[in-house]
Length: 176
Image 1 (cartoon, helix red, strand yellow):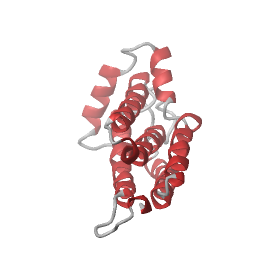
Image 2: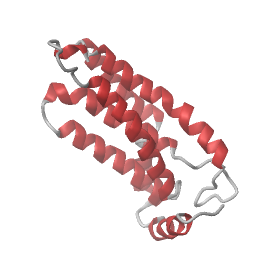
Image 3: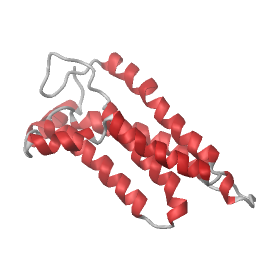
């Protein structure tokens, strides 16, 4: 593999890997596991749906369903080896980062209109960032694997936000 970003990516990874205890970084990385992150989104989807925001809840669920449809083919196509496992392939982009971003930020998008506070977004960014840091510092992903997932998910989450926003001229706030 070659490219202008690979050298800085590898240098940054070498500087970061195992700078924190594995027991901590494993727990941070686990925040992106499906059994941890997806239930957070499901609870927010149920809450939003019960508040009449069916379209918003469905958009968030669709964004999560698109994660494997986008990540798996990219992993197979790039066949990028891992930082600590150069014999293995399929590390780009990071599925754990994508799962965390869509679950936590998607939940924040669904909850924020009902809280009228910034804490859902702040919590989502902290949890997603913690997942990304855990994956890179533990050595399970290159920094670009994580960055690619965040950029991909930003597009999905912009779609969720768009569907969740009230429509101009709409008198019902709960329709989104």
